[in-house]
Structure formats: structure tokens, C-alpha cells
Image: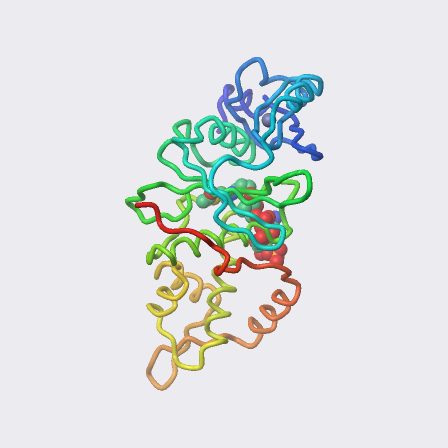
Length: 281
Ligand code: ACO
Ligand code: ZN
């Protein structure tokens, strides 16, 4: 059951304007009181500062010379770039990002304290700058070996394959660290759909391109997906078969067909050779 205060909270922000997009907020986000009840909040798409009117925003834009997220560009290929930000060093920017992303994340407590996290921000580059598409955050030290804390594709960019790129990127970082990783629980419904799709494809891809029998452990080591997530995916998709008294992994014909179809419409992937990054020490 929802309390009165929760119902009131849901109702605060209505719409957000970010760059050339205007989107509905889905959930409560703790923007300061004086902004909370405006019909539209106007965001600078580069510094993520927020304003009460288009006039205030345009005045800000004359002074704001940011054209990409602050921090290091650690990946660049075609028109996609990733920036790594430290919640401690780029405090204001990361706080603004948290406020923005809370508009689309319900189940998570918002991290008011951004300092324990690194932020990986995916942008599309054009002549006017690097436009934010989505991001994920990651604890600097995760006791539970989570490789993602929060993940988000901005609503105007969802269902275009960007979530998959963010997820792939998070596993590429884990591979460089030589670790297995999994997203922080609980996952949202959309988060679960996105991850299930990624795990299934990655495992199928590996199985179809290796000739030898592959064990759960080998799949985990090659993909940085945890044993539990590999097991779960293989069980759900009914990859385990009994054969001459042994368990073998085999992909049903129908799943192979579906996989090939979805691969055909896939335009992009992350190319690890363009990732210029070493695990922070
Ligand atoms: N309905 C059905 N399947 C979906 C949907 C949907 N609305 N969205 C994603 N999927 C599945 C599909 O299988 C899809 O592949 P397909 O389009 O080829 O069928 C696959 O996920 C990947 O889709 P993408 O387009 O790559 O994902 P998207 O860019 O939309 O991002 C994300 C997915 C990040 C979960 C996005 O929905 C989002 O930001 N949601 C709001 C915030 C959120 O819930 N984040 C996760 C919280 S959990 C956590 O942070 C650890
Ligand atoms: Zn700005």
C-alpha cells in the first residue's frame, strides 16, 4: 500500500526538457522544493544543471561552455564515447545526474552520496557536442562484486540497443579487471529484461563460436558473467540436456533461430580494442 506522502511524491515533477527532447518523469526525484512543482524543468544537457524557465536556461547556456561530461574519455569509436567520472571529483555533475536518473528509477534508494561511485557516461558525438544517452554507476569497492549499481538509458533513447551497449561495456570493464560481475539487486523489470537479453545472447554467441564442449566455469571466465547468472540463463532457456548419463549444454534449434534474427538487426556493439582504461588502483 502507498502512503499519502508517497502518492504526493510521485506527483512532483511532470516533464523534463533535455537538449532537444522533452520527456515525462516516471517517479519522484528530490529536486529542490522550488523546482519540484513546475510543469517543466529545463536541463542544460551538458552540465545537467536545472532551471525553471527556458529564459533561465538560455541565459545559462551563454555562460556554460561544457560540451561533454567532465572526466576522462575512455572509449571512442564511430560516434560513441564513454566518459569516466569520479563522484568525489565531479561531485556536482554526478549529483545532477543522480537527480535526473531518479526520475526513471523507482526501486533504488537514490545515492545522495555520490562519492563512493564511479560513473560511466555514454554519449553520442556530433558537431554540437557529446550528448548523453545513458550511463551506469559502479561502486569503487564492491563487497558483493557488483559491477553495476544503477543503469539507465534516457527514455528518449530507449529500445534502440543502447542499454545492451551499456551492459556490454560494464562487462568489458570487468574483463579488464579480471573479475566476474553482476548488477546490483534488486533489478527493475526493465533492468531484468535488458540483462536477460544480454546474458542469453552472450552465452549463445560463445557456444556457437566454440567447437569444444564448454563448461559453466569457462563461460563465466570468458564473459565475466557470474556462475549464478550463467546457470540461471542456461536453465531458463533450457540449455541443459542429459546425454549418455551426463549433463551437456546444448542450444535448442528454436533459440538459435531467434538469436540469429536478433543478431541481424543489431547495428552496433562495443569494440574492446577502443577501450583505453586500466582498473583504478
Ligand atoms: N519491453 C520488452 N523488452 C525490453 C524492453 C521493454 N520495454 N526494454 C528492453 N527490453 C529487452 C529486449 O530484449 C531488448 O532487446 P530487443 O530490443 O532487441 O528486443 C533488450 O532488453 C535490450 O534493449 P535495449 O534497447 O538495449 O535497452 P534500453 O536502451 O531500452 O535500456 C534499460 C534498458 C537500461 C533497462 C532501460 O529500460 C532503462 O533505463 N530503464 C529505466 C531505468 C531502469 O529500470 N534501470 C535498471 C534498474 S536495475 C539496476 O540499475 C541494476
Ligand atoms: Zn550547462
